Image 1: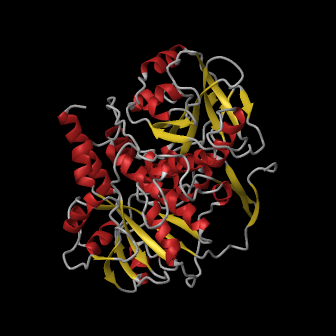
Image 2 (image 1 turned 45 degrees about the vertical axis):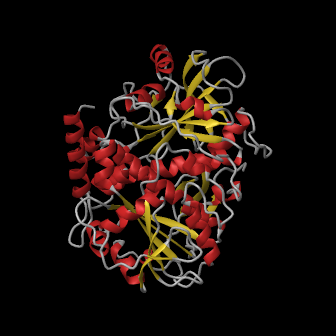
Image 3 (image 1 turned 180 degrees about the vertical axis):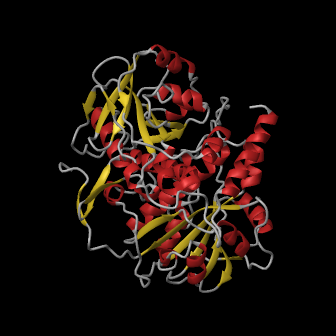
Length: 530
């Protein structure tokens, strides 16, 4: 991208970001009501594509287990599969392992993997309702340089699924969901002893061509936008970071593609602002991969998340306003967000952050309500030491910045009862105040865009969603529950913290507490056989 094009893209991103902020006197542009007649189908299918049912059994736990149809199916099931069916009256809907704003699931998953029973590679779409692969194209044996035991997983977004409910702000939520999906994949891979690496050297056009989402669609079928490609498996995923896309793409261009995508809605509302920011944030050129060496990196850390937490994860709909969190559990959560772990927590480097090719850019502002041994108040957690000075300079000057004993890198900014403030800032939602803790995730938006270009805007939301996925699973581990909060009054948050301009921006809110279950709903397993 030329300098002029990059500057124009950054300007488009900032215009979109400001346009889609919520404020006390107005919300971001949206339809204003739910048009149930056009509610999108949450399941994309490819009619006419050969279907391969994935094994319906849990493989035995193994360290660096081989890439087989069993282990691939288990990874996809724990990352993107159904976790439950809910029903209220005549309405019935599915929940999945990867969280989604409004449970609308704009993220689609694809697998590029070697044939388990023969030669060559295939591109397949994962159908979560059926727990099956829809085989879209055979690539043959064109990628011999790919290490054994590695497959590729690609993610794409159907922006319409979120825009149907949330209007222009939906692009943000789609990017959150990509981050959650990346996190879900990393955790699922970890249970098999596998590793994951984001392949940031590929352009969006490369990803789209390999996954087949750039191919002509039947009239009225919603477009999928390419998000990212990840190397997954027990093999040398780092070697794939340096692989050149061209051999894969030559095979994709000459392959015979099968299957027609289904239309998700009979009609649509156009959102030009989403179209504009989608174009502005494309990765249009191939980047030089940042091949980092991750000291001590392993698919297992000291206390890995188990399979049961992955498939029982839920988003809370309400908290009881009374439950408390043990300070040791909070310390573990905070340590999980640090790429190198925390020396005092017993946790080593996390495979979650090893998957990303950049240093942390998102930094939590914690709203601590009820944590044993910790004073209620607002806290900051710069996730790398180099971020401390920038955060201090970007926030109001009268904050305390007192280091918290026993929490490396955690600072008390203001001791106070922040429950009412958290509720007000998060669109007056009780769930932000009734939990043990809440969070606002700050990004150095202006400097990140200047340094890395407009495509970085998506990556900031991905990292926010990835933090959210870590917190979802830590909540389950601690006996609580969590929920992501996409609705908050953007500049009111900034005003409270003394933020001016685009130096820092809040991209995502989160809350965790003791859940209140809705007894009106009935629950069934995601799969009858599981």
